[in-house]
Image (cartoon, rainbow, N blue to C red; front, side):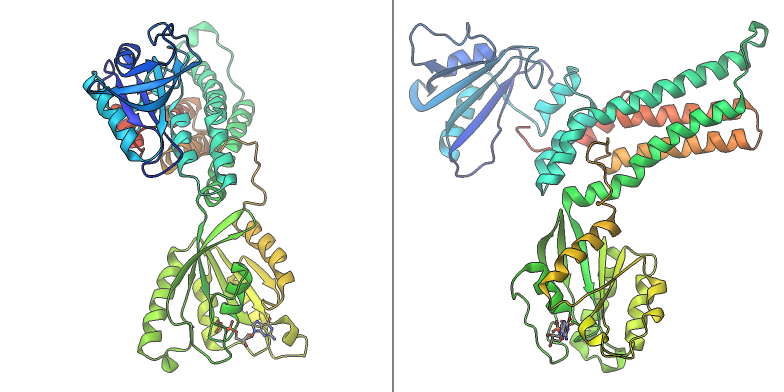
Length: 462
Ligand code: GDP
């Protein structure tokens, strides 16, 4: 770690753009800044610049006057990293920003490692590990809703709620320890019912986090979605409905959509990463290309976060339909009984052969634009995004999910121990486990290795 060095990096994306911002942070930020940046007003100086002020001027490289530059000043500890920080804005494109970084390095700065600014913020107590992770999520969020969710984590709500749970468990643990270890002290015994109720309240909070994780992830990053169904049931028509224009070729002849096409469409708040699959027909009918398409479809079905299984409600259910339905069992799959206009004519379509395999079912006409709204609602309901509380604390990555799950399970075991009448020391052991998992979650006792892992996916300049 180079905590005492002064680091610099491009904070804006590389490439052409209006402005480029280079950030400088560390104990020598002002000394280095003063060598590189020259204010236009002779009376002004970098060394005397106060925090939260700006100066206009230019920067120097090898003594040459380079681009016009705006310098923004922050004084420790009132900055992102908690150190002295100067942000220098020059014209966009890489030429001027590269020159500026070169000048800063020549003046004594060192190039920042990925995520090093945020890491310093963490190490200087400016943010918690969960907040640092939120920064990364905001940068990578694919949608405004996703960014808003990550922003909540940045507000520190998760860390605060975790702290609340930790305090409650800690006082339970202290009480149990006192009662077990100092019998002569006359510590009042915790009534099992009271203990259990307090544990149950903590478990409910933890359950809420774990259960809403997937829905939150869907909002932040979208969901991989596979569209399945026999030829001619209306998959291409449905895709056009989703995409809002005639993208796939819709034809009454079976099996034109032979390849797996990927496309992202926005369905309400959710981005669907679509895999348009080749028609799934009975194996005996399939030619070689389609067999490959089918194989890929089954694989996608297993990996997808959302399966839209389309059936033709205007025709009898076939063996291929049942095979598709069977494979959807236990998956996040929505059965779409399409062509309801034809179903009305007393078709032979027997829904009951398919519905047992699905969590949710929707009846619609893919040709009808009005079907989009109910389909949007059905998908939101299936993925749990509809009931996601926008103000609740949420977990934002697998590391947090694993720690929260471990804490939740340990509290569950503590409750089971109380229920089974194993004695309070057994519950105490489980509560200690839960406390350790919570410390993992908030990064309180995070080891260097864990922090390295968190920052390994950060971009340089953040
Ligand atoms: P795919 O092979 O599954 O992609 O099916 P297509 O989307 O190509 O649709 C097959 C045929 O069914 C086309 O002629 C569509 O216009 C028609 N179709 C799709 N949806 C509906 C619907 O809701 N009602 C009716 N009557 N026909 C539909």
